[in-house]
Length: 106
Image (tube, rainbow, N blue to C red; front, side, top):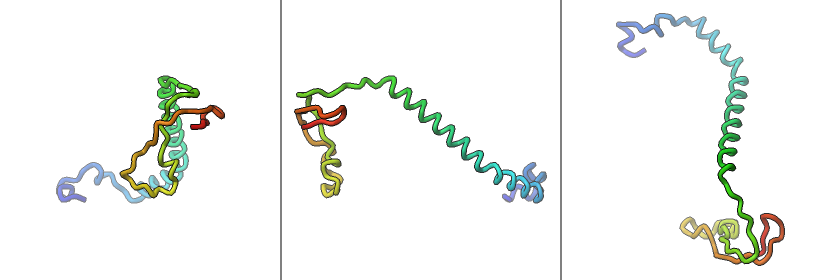
């Protein structure tokens, strides 16, 4: 309790009982799994809404032969020996051939 509640008791202190508190905590423990599932469902629904919102505004642009592209340098150097001040992208490279959608020969 804070010092003010010693002289003037708040409704929280007046209506507190150990038995009701223990019973309430046990009831909450029984509902923990259900609350977690509800939270997970809300997160999944939110992520779907954000994904739909983003995908509505994205214009996919397929790459063709002759296009100039940048290559991610962290993929080119998986050991990470370049340091944090190294550039994140390499290039530009020209696309020589499209092997599969999303796979290119530079």
